[in-house]
Length: 415
Image (cartoon, rainbow, N blue to C red):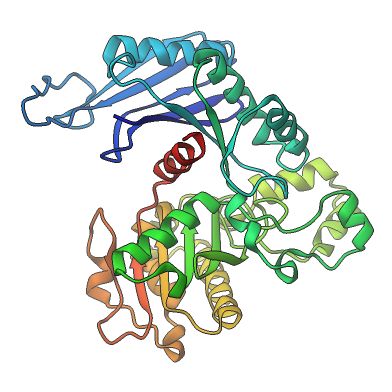
C-alpha cells in the first residue's frame, strides 16, 4: 500500500491527511491548532470504511458519522515540533497504525514558490533556504510552512519530504500575462510579477473536468472559478495556466471574503494622505477588512445571501459587486482564450452556491453558455453538469481536492 501524509501548515496550526494512494481514499485527517497559545487543541478523525472482512468499530461520542470517529484533545502545544508529537500520539492511540500503514513520503503545501519552483520538489536544506527567502513575498504563509516542514522532518527523518507550491501551476503564464507595467529594473530587483495562487486546486479541477467529460485535456479551453473565502479564476488552455486573477500576492483579482481584489492603487495614496493610514494600516484594510466584510459586515457568502433574501440593501450591493467582478473576469478570459469549452466552479462558494454560479454566467448567453436552473440547484457531492444539453459550453461543479493533488504530486516526485 502506498500511503502519503499531506501537511498544510500555518504559523499557529497545521492540518493533515493520511491518504491511501492505491484507492485514493483518506484514512485519517486532523487539525492541530492554537500552537504557541496557553492551551492548544488537536482533532483527529479516523475514517472507518468497513472493507469486506473488516469490523466497523462502534461510533464514539462526537463522531461525524456512524463510521467515522473524531477524537479531540486540549493541551499546551508550544511549537510545531510538539504539535507533530501530538499528531503521532493520535495515530498511535486511535489509528490507523503508522507501523501498518506507514507513509512513503510527506507532502507539504507551500504557498509561494516564486519563479524558482515550477514543479513538486523534494525538500533539501537548499530548498528550505529558498522557501525562507521567498517569505518576503508571502510573509503570512511561507514562514508557517517552513515551521511545519522542519517539525515534520524531525517526526519522519527517514522519509522524503516534498514541497508542492500553490504558484507552480501558473509558471506557464506567458510574459505578457505575468508582467506588470512598471519600471523593468525595479520589478526585476524586487521580483515583482504576477505569480498566481490556488494553482493546486486549478490543476486538479481542470484535469478532473477533462477526465469526467472523457475529453483530452490538451484539446480543452477552460475557465476555472475557485470561489472560497479566498477566490481566484484561471484560464487554462490545453492543461496550461495562461491567465489568472491573483498576482504578486493573493490580494489581486476577485472580491473575496475579507480581501478587496482589484482596486485603483491611487486609492492607497489618497487614504495615506487624507486618512493618515500607514502601510501596515492599508495592508490590514485591504487584506482583512475589505471584500464582503468591508461592504456588508460579513465575510461568509451564506450570511450575505441570507440577508439578501431578507431585503438587506448592504448585502444586496455586496452580492452584486461580487458578481460584477466574476462576470468581468469571465468575459476577459473568454477573449484571452478565444472561446471556451468548459467552465468549472469549485471550493466552498463555487460548489455550494447556485445563486453565485447562475449570477456569474447570466450575461454569457452570447457565448453559448446556458445554465439549467434545475441542475444548478440540485445537490450532489460529485462532479456534475449544470449546463443545459443545448449549451455550447459545458458548465460543471467540480469538488476540489487539493490534498489529493498534493499527495499525487508528492508520490510522483518522491518515486
